[in-house]
Image (cartoon, rainbow, N blue to C red; front, top):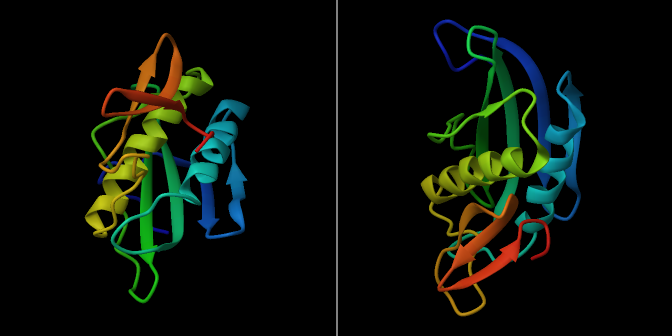
Length: 153
């Protein structure tokens, strides 16, 4: 896959999530926190989609050595449609961040990209969108006053 930035960083991760199969790590030069975070978000991707069905998500991560940030991009494919193209959200994580911070970054990105593909995810127990947050240093989905640990939906 082609890098997203004009001044491209080093590609340090590629992975794919496929419905009912989960996350498949193609390559990674990142700490285990990144792989563990992808697994947690991938677990939650199997449930509570509304307005379409996500068939596949591809991830590419690029490391920016000047800042120490890893910029994660994703490409969402909805069942019956083609890929939506690589995109990103407004958040990034440092290469050495703890798993909880990385989980929130990945969840934020995936949520934005899935929404751009016209699927609402994750959908709460009582309806409505949930958003990723850090609460007492734990990555959670939050919505309508309820919280669930990311990876437990």
